[in-house]
Length: 455
Ligand code: GUN
Ligand code: ZN
Image 1 (tube, protein in one colour):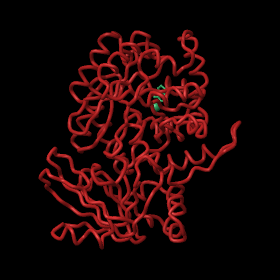
Image 2: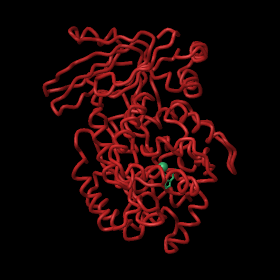
Image 3: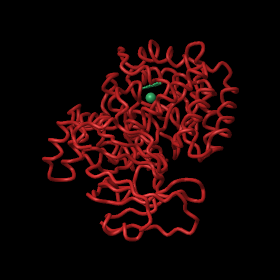
């Protein structure tokens, strides 16, 4: 490993060192991980107020270059990129584990009634605060997150994220039909104006970003989808998020509602909602033309394996996505998803790819799974170099792993011989106990209760 210093001309404050093992992706575009057993990471606040990584390297090489640096030392632990969740719903925190006979009954019986509760700003604040603390506890430092149809639900989320100095992306859900009273946009033009107001209020404030958020094609009129598409063209720097091709009943419904479209994806394409910085959750039942189209415009797929298994939606086709050059990242999709833990999501992604479901199963490498939930997910968001890695110039959000967090993890990780074996043991056995600390902007924001296993 070579020491990677960064040239800086602007004044730096709050310089800090962090010493432990280090896991990172030297080329953020490629799922090849590196590990250093005793590393130093140097962070400092830059002139724009953001705390970034200034240098990484083996401790013995880098420490002499920073003689006055206050250093936090975690012997036996390992620093790793903060996880990036490419698709999650904060208002569904209390929906996790609500079983239903597939997506559409689940939405009707559990999800919509819960989301209606966020019309109350106090409730939205409370749920958003709990949700963000839980994300950090699980090692997730950035997420692309649905709010609800209520603009105040976005205000609550953004304010709570801002208080915690997080890089978070969210937006008001657009849904002007096939939705219950209290969740339905009753005035389409007004819903679009609310979206623009929220973009002006929140996009680019501190580390917050706005995402234009049509729920999915069945709950928006053509007028709303096309209006959202116009806003998406007008503000190319904001994100677009929605759902596509998740469930066969949903797809049948989309074909009835939009007979003019070649495919479900084409509904969004015709509305101007398919572009770089657009992220579509699920992407299970796409065809090759859809995948190629997404790759051509630089749109990304959020792969949601725990949700797809829980709701019985289907199996993401990794080889087909790969052949098309589709940008992908991993996502929990809480509350359809069953866990906030990136380890559970990576494990489920491995399981999904392994299945023979009309095509041969494949074995995804643990580095690949880890990358798709960190640097790869950041690249899908166009935030490459900013989050999801531990390279100089990146923002100082990271996790500290305790590979001996449980007796079984301690035993299993001690017997691994390669980096891949070590990562695999954590992917399969890991959960929140593996996250000893989460560091946000150079501050320890969450810490696990330490076990007796050497922490
Ligand atoms: N499709 C439309 N809305 C939703 C949602 O909230 N969750 C999931 N998994 N799919 C959806
Ligand atoms: Zn979702």
